[in-house]
Length: 272
Image (tube, rainbow, N blue to C red):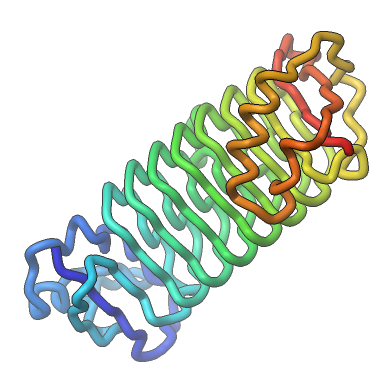
């Protein structure tokens, strides 16, 4: 598999859908073949070469040397390989991924890693609303893989999440882990209102401890000790560094819920 470098010619006037432009899809193609690949811009279908200067690389990576804030579905249904974006990306980045790695140096729009089933999406900046969640009209959110956000996250992060791990180094918006079914979410900063609304199972870890949030009335203090399980979870999160590096040395305060829906999820507040 050869690598590719895409250099943006000019910012598009309308939003562009980049679905289908993945390392697996480009494997074995010539430069001319890649230049002719169709992408949708507004209500028109144009050749990929209308937007990018395309050249091959010695590595196996697909590198976008550009800010793709007006390009949606970057890494959509990605099934392997490595993609790197030197700027921001639009909506649905890494959506429905099953394998591979997508690294974004800037920010990501709404619905990043929606219904992700495998692979890794890392975002150096912020992500918009509904990251790691479900597509509109669907019942299942993130189903596997790893989402790492070095900045802040918008509202409904991890909505209907079923599996996998999602980390936010900064703050998270309202309705964090709403309707969560399973999986692990870790937050380095503060959370907005209604954390765990409708949560049934899963774990949400707050590295900032009690300062991060005040659990709602439908979450009750846990009485049973979970020290062994916490050590396993804390060590796994600590490898990401940042606000999670000191977690193995901390004790925890746990709250269970959302009892309003018979939920058995847990909010874990790390404490010195």
